Image 1 (cartoon, rainbow, N blue to C red):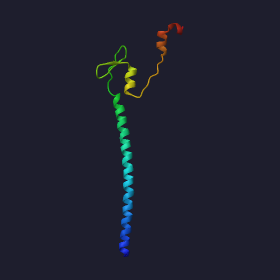
Image 2: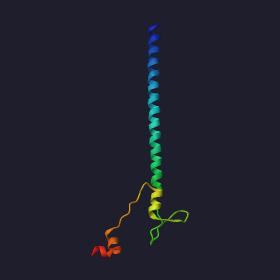
Image 3: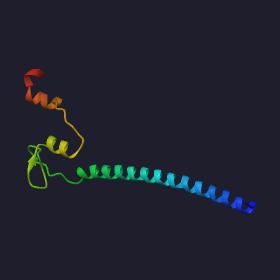
Image 4: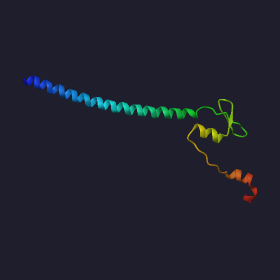
Length: 103
């Protein structure tokens, strides 16, 4: 084989190998971008769940859903977010509800 042909073959082989490496890198980056895009869409969906005005009863604090049904605020927020509730009594309510204990 002539030196020129051998150099050309070596150069083509090198270019082919470079192309294969670039294709693998591109595929890996594409997969990472798709994963990040899915996470962003999931986060956006979560953000939208509790956005805007919540119609709330001024007395009992129940929330009205888009179907017109009323729900306890804890149930509504738990159903539309990752929040969970733990109940207690604040000092003002404790004094009002149990005045004998706050002598």
